[in-house]
Amino acid sequence: MHPYNARTFILREDLCATFEAPFIYLLVGSTKALLIDTGDVADPTQMPLASTLMHLLTAAGSAELPWLVVHTHRHLDHRAGDGQFAHLPNVQVVGFDLDSVRRFYNFSDWPNGLAQIDLGDRTVDVIPTPGHNETEVSFYDRNTGLFFFGDFLMPARLLVDNARAYLTSAETVAAFVRDRPVTFVLGGHIEMNSSGELFPWESQYHPHERVLEMTKDDLLALPAALRNFNGFYTHSGNFILIDSMRILIVCAGLAGVILIALVWILVRYLRRRSRARRLRPATQG
Image (cartoon, rainbow, N blue to C red; front, side):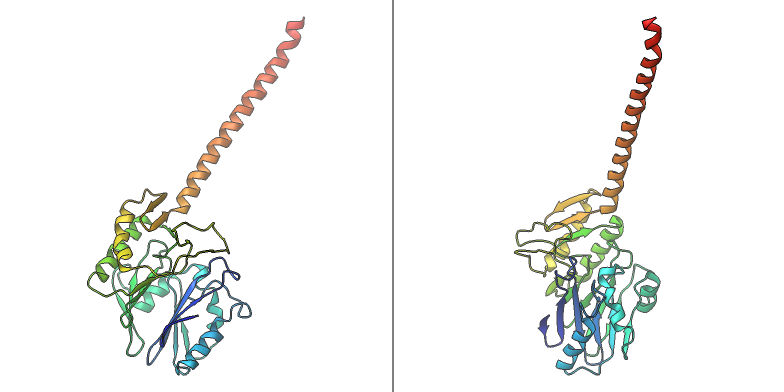
């Protein structure tokens, strides 16, 4: 747990508990508390997220506030802890499917539009940012200038599900922040060391880990990086863009071609052996 200030908290699930080690954010207003994501661990005995947050709110003098639990997107490592809040009084957990997201924020023309969450003396803007996932939204806190991005922008692999949507979202967000202060850009994971090199996938050992925060300049540079994305893997500036599904499809296709070639070679070999056996008695006679 890291208190950014008395009303803003950054939490992270331990690498020993999950290689995802996602970040979770708590924003406290005067009338409501906002939790962004619930992490990758469901078991409260292993990761007591709800009870930890209750202690934080009590310490902040906000124990009686209602909670709103939202998600940056629907991937399990950002919502596995939802069950810890299901039966708590005065807690609303927003659904993670696209219909629930659109309905709650009143996005009638998804992915266009802008919504606000009023926490009391604290307004958070909500922006649709599909590209990594179709349900992705990002959160801009006007009080602190912090921008929370989930897996859309972070010091890690940027996994591209839809390159066109990703670029459109990046351009939308860049236009949104151009004349607004951005203190830090905060994402959902860290997968790089301080030299900008990626840790092995699913590694639970992160020596010399890079800092979490990125900058407004990174945010403004993202559209150009996405325009240069080759559709498979591109390392552009501070960004490593990967379309893992397309890479898997190509690898599967190549494996299929190799398998077909090997079968063809084997069939030809067996046919030649069979022909040779048929011809051998006639030659000997």
